[in-house]
Figure 1 (cartoon, helix red, strand yellow):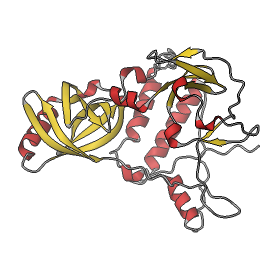
Figure 2: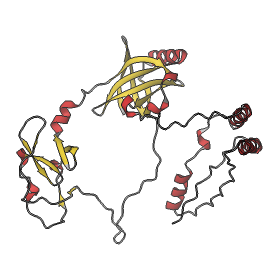
Figure 3: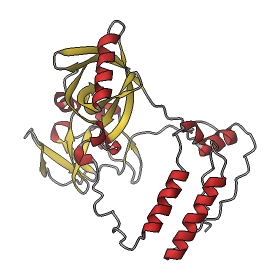
Figure 4: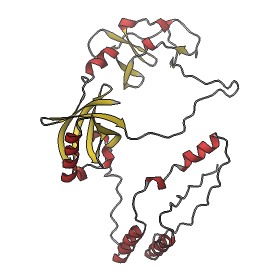
Amino acid sequence: MWSGTISFGLVSVPVRLYPATRRQDVRFHEIDRSSGQRIRHQKVIEAPWSSDLPAPALTSPGGEGNFMPGRKGVVPTSTWPPRFMEPRPAGAAQPVAAADVVKGFEVAKDRYVTVGREELEELAPERSRTIDVEQFVDASAVDPIYYDVSYYAVPERGHERAYGLLVDAMRETGKLAISWFVLRRKRYLAALRPQGRLMVLSTMFHGDEILPATELEPAQPRDLSKKEREMAALLVNTLSGPFEPERYPDEYRQRLKELVEGRAASARPTAPEVLTGSGVNDLMAALRASVEQARRAPKGRAKPAARRKRKTA
């Protein structure tokens, strides 16, 4: 889906990017109940234009004339009156041609500043075929919350040696590469990190896109005893094991596929009893019971998660 070079210092490694993930959601189309035909969506104006609009009130960002405010936004005077200005019956939907659709940013309630396609093209980054390494950082210093979409970065033929050298160096030093690259006219912040003999490139959220969690953190409990902490650690260790993704299938998607394919839905297991308590004795009892239950559970077999009971009206 993308080809270019990883560039760090004076070294360049040609690579190709392949998607590392694929959504498996069951997707539906909208169908008309009576005719069975597929429903298509159309761009329309929320309210019909009328001839009693107020005078020009908003100046365009570039000073190129005025904007004429409408009931749901503003329109440049250079296009006034638009083709869909003819009087219409009250409440009638008015289709809009694709050529007449512009981007609008809401600056106040029901008032917009429009930006043309040409202006957006001027602001877009230059096309590039380079993954520019900005800095190598400790892999442990980057919280996974920053990762968004991942791709496999595969070396071009004849460049496996330089590629392998970079993978080994990053693994041995425990580093990942903070990089920039352009994909589909958008510039992405990304992280290059080793995974086996490959490198994975993950697009990243910017710092101001991560929501602060300081106000969400609960207060540190001060009355936890040493025995409670030891029992909790014992429970964690008892339930520990290797990460095996195949043990955690999307059961909802499987049931949905069975429903769509006309197969009988499988019986849903009842939710197991959960011990809870706020007191010290209740907490210790719940921890002990959980440890015993974990010890009795067969190893290597996934345990279905308890489903929440749906509230009835």
